[in-house]
Amino acid sequence: MNKNCSVETAHAGSTTYVFLVCIVAALGGLLVGYDIDVINEAIGPLKKHFDLDPVQQGWAFFSALLGCTALTLTFPYLKGGLGAHGAFWLYGVICVIGFVVIFLKLPETKGKSLEDIERELVD
Image (cartoon, rainbow, N blue to C red; front, top):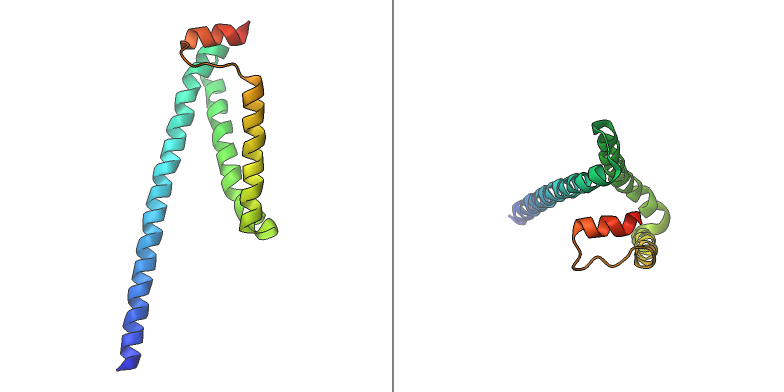
């Protein structure tokens, strides 16, 4: 009787695990869709500012997605080489460097229209 209980418990645990994996995969799919929408919305101002033709817009979109894909594909190797903590510390350092560069190089845009920002960046 004990043997049957342990098999049923193991099966219930496996079902819960599979259910949780499905939820995480679904949420990941939603986030990827969100990223694509964010990238897609950034193409409009790029098109207007740089006068991009459709091929150039496609390359800009492709480049952004390629960067996202590179991050996703390199994580397992970084985790294997640096460990999970090391991989996230590396990503954290990259984010801090990006923050510093943006903070020092980009002007404040609060309360300004898109046209004012474009004029300021072009001049």
